[in-house]
Amino acid sequence: MALRRAETLIETSVLGMEEIGGNDKVFRARARIVPQTYLLAAARYHRRLDDVSTWA
Image (cartoon, rainbow, N blue to C red):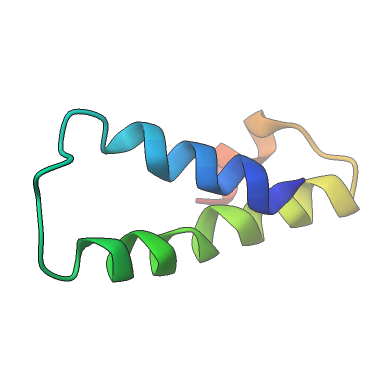
């Protein structure tokens, strides 16, 4: 679940930027790791997104 949410966050942040090339896909794949980690921790400890925003 955390991975899907992280993917959604990253993919929606680049809407309208489909023609950007280079290492874009690599950076997007790596960028998923950070929100995934926060979301996984929130789920594990039954915390809310408000808590996640204070951790970041």
